[in-house]
Length: 467
Image (tube, rainbow, N blue to C red; front, side, top):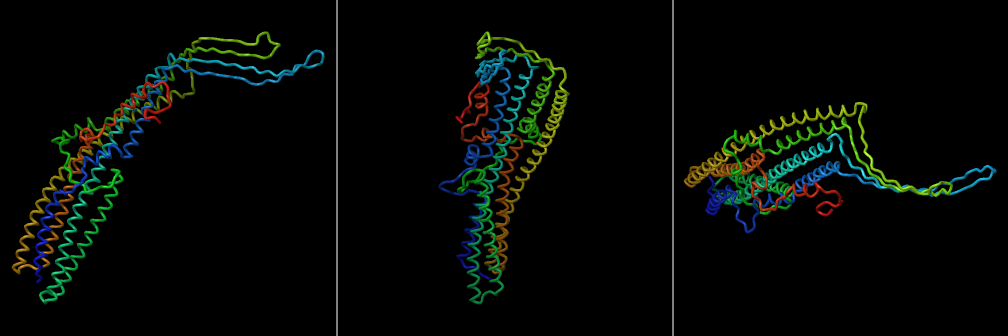
């Protein structure tokens, strides 16, 4: 039987105390990042989120484009050229001339009636903007969940690496004491081999934990935009969650951006039918024009003509080969499809909420079970150590008990990580995971600001940010 040195036993006790601290994820550091800090960086700098904001600004421009149908159209025209003329005369002679006529004019066209197409196009564009805002909310939620997952993966990996390092330190000291005992003839080569095997297993576990940490740090940097420092622990976001699953389902049906966005898609499809039906109505425009034409042919009685006119132009469609009818039928099918998609989205959200709710509740149970396992494994290890001191247990028994405690600590770390991620995932499934509810310390990105800046713009090529 191997008797570890007193220093190894003392270090073993200190490692157990250290693991108890690591299991709570409290890492003391002069400079430490928090989860709200990471989410703030994501909200401000994440490329996927910024790209979706740009997409919404693109969608905003559909509204002024639709509103242009109410506004007059002004155009100017200029025609000029060179004409060579060779006229034959009765006396068999000829007369040649080079003419340079030109004409300039300005035309103003004001639409008066186009079958309500402009009004319905504006409604369609506004519904697209509202749907785009919900798409932005959806991307914000998905990015936040990805950031929380990456953050907690790094936190768990950091705790596990520290635990594995403490474990390797103990196993190294235990192997040293076992070799000394073998040299003194107190143990057999089998005891040394067991200690060596457990030590190398500890090195392998430490290496695996460090590799996982490096991989998760790379994922964190990809999502958050900066390399992680020593991250502090995070709490579940239970304050955003309802008390019952039925309440959660009701919230999801009402607030989730995918559902709200699909409802706006239905409105868009309804307006599209009215836009297509406009092709069946007559159109009426008022047109005013002024022009001047100049002739350089000296044989004419006049050399210039000035014109000004105001006319009304009405067009009544009679038959277009079936184009308008096909477009109307197509728009009606698109409306039916959008309603089916809305039903599908509602079912998907309900399924996502049910799954997220069960996962979150399961994570709570897993934490309680892991904490109980750690307490029992700690007591078991203490008992095995006392029995080892009395000569009733072998070194392998101590190593096995310590390994059981390490495994329990690892499961507790994973359970605490999963609990935080599950709570944020459930909040996203409800449609409640946004920067305002999270209370992030960051200026808001207000989609309506850009919308108001461009909605009634009659001219200008620069975007509101100066591009």
